[in-house]
Length: 232
Image 1 (tube, rainbow, N blue to C red):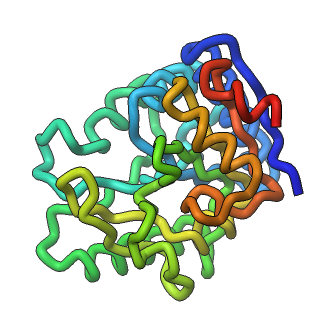
Image 2: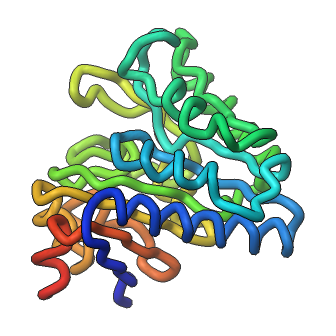
């Protein structure tokens, strides 16, 4: 099954298109089920997307729950953390509930279990997120599912410790939690992602992103990232 891809002119255009898609999903979920439960990834392109999302019209933010797709284990005020930027970018989204991963806990297994319980509290048992936003690394990782990390093979948990990667342990949603979601949206920008994106589009299971469920998955990419994928 082919993943749908939408190609934007540049990173800002890609971020705006992704924001529009998330807002549309939010409005539909709130109309159908009374709430929108999503997960957001970190990174530079997502910050632009999230700021644009916070300005989208017609979203009842008091009915929105935002979970983290993954988080680095670092002190609360450390610049490596995604949480502060997530809150900053969604500042205009008045009333949205942001659920933070408790990476300050000494026992990351307990922190993972607590976050899985929070997911279930917002999205049912087993939790079904309305949408998971994903990034894509040049090495093919997504969330904190990194090539060679055993966390990729987990099937019986929705949240688990991962790492170390780039000097940090992580907490991450697992593939079952991501695949169970109603929709998945990759935002991919930059020429350095072109090779990984081409592999994702081909369903290359040698990279973690290539293992993500394909039906219900959409990619918004800028032209630099999409070059090889658009041809193949």
